[in-house]
Image (tube, rainbow, N blue to C red; front, side, top):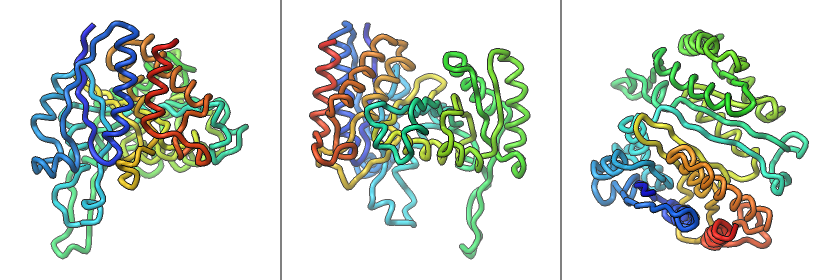
Amino acid sequence: MNYKIAVLPGDGIGPEIIDQAIKALNAVAGKFNHSFIYEYALVGAVAIDKTGSPLPEETLLKCKASDAVLFGAIGDPKYDADPKATVRPEQGLLAMRKELGLYANVRPVTTFPSLLDKSPLRKEIVSGVDILMVRELTGGIYFGKPQGRSEDGKTAYDSCVYSRFEIERVVRLACEYALKRKGKVTVVDKANVLATSRLWRETSKEIASEYPGIEMDFMFVDNAAMQLIQNPLRFDVIVTENMFGDILSDEASVITGSLGLLPSASIGLSTSVFEPIHGSYPQAAGKNIANPLGTILSAAMLLETGLNLTRESHAVTKAAIKSLEAGIVTEDIDRSNPCSTSMVGDRIAEYILST
């Protein structure tokens, strides 16, 4: 079959890691007789430099016309170093979430047996960890109004706003995922302090009654942050609001031993975006040393979640695991005998075609 994929390499290491994911997708296309049509577009700092906008209209149109979006990374030091910059690369990501209706970010956090010694936590704590983080993506303090600063610049304020509808759809999504897993959903909030969290808890309890096969519990965000380190095996699916999810999912990512290993999906109303969870890592840009596995595994999520190609997705995941087991890894995992970014991509494509 034919599928149209919008490809947004972005900034920093984005183009390099996207190239490796494309190798995997091309291998899948050859093995399973599919045709992937790639529509490349600008986003982030590179888009600002060329068009003045971090999310040009042409990019948005290509995303809306695609079956799925493969995204690299956003960010550039020249904007980070200028606190007065009015246009920033990250605005492109927020705009894309809003315009595509990307209401939930889904991040699997899975430990690999061959890399347990790379985790900062003891093997007995992380062995067998398989968590799915579901983060609400278009509400909360990142989008709340009013937001701003006082006239004298000495006071700043943000607003955290949530509607029942926003909470319902992401909690239902978490429950649907849990039905395919261990059947447990943990709702993370701060209901002892925040009014929005109390609405989250009330709404989630109502949703739970619609899913008799789901076990739902509730945890304050500070306790959840501790439990992720002390006892991550207690979790199956975690669902939470935007800022809490941003922080907790990054915390959970270190369990695997490398930030470069983890993929994500941002589920949209019409199309979805698939990207590694790490940033643009500008210090490594152009050096062929960045870990492409998070992006390749994001392509696996794109195949399954975005295109409903489960068998093809599993082929990519199996190839990535085989690469790890064979020691075909970048320097963030093996400093003594690292492989290059492109070598990892080549080998994974070979594994897909040969199995």
